[in-house]
Image (cartoon, rainbow, N blue to C red):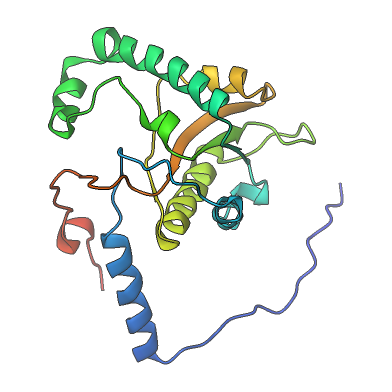
Amino acid sequence: MAVEVYPQVPLVHEELEPGVMLDRAGNLLAAMQRRRSVREFSDQPVPRELIEHAIATAGTAPSGAHREPWHFVAISRAELKSEIRKAAEAEEKESYTRRMPEAWLKAIAPLGTDWRKPFLEIAPWLVVCFAKNTGDDRLKNYYVQESCGIACGFFIAAVHHMGLVTLTHTPSPMGFLQRILGRPRNERAYMLFPVGYPAPGATVPVLERKPLEALVSWHE
């Protein structure tokens, strides 16, 4: 069976001097090194246009066979955020008290988190990434987990770059999000992001990231 191949166009690429490239690389690294997961949010409003830009940036991520197997739902309505918090805390309480193995509880204990998630109501926006196992054309999507993971990474970088903060929140199980938000059966909640400004006086844990030499092996 003949397959129609995408038409080709010249690549638009900005060729830079090595020094400029190094400066840009260093600036991005420095900016991302300041990125932190935040759990204390201000209720200061955030314009919808900023959320639109972050989601549009996420949508530029590569995906298996260019199937773009993601759908983002953005919520600012107070009653919906309250319903999501109530459902998330019910699942989280069950997880913290019964589901999580002792090793996992021990691993997260230094972060000082528990089942209470007030940020789900305080943050001006909640953005949920849904992973789509099939497309709107009902055909199978490929590399769904990997593709959505990359898109979510782009989203986090965009949020941080514009001066907002976020948190990767994955209450388990997350089926309640599909129900509350009325999403179709071919979608499942992949990640939940509260997005906004940090609360005045917000704090984060003192953490050390692995140095470069611990992250990479070279074969030159």
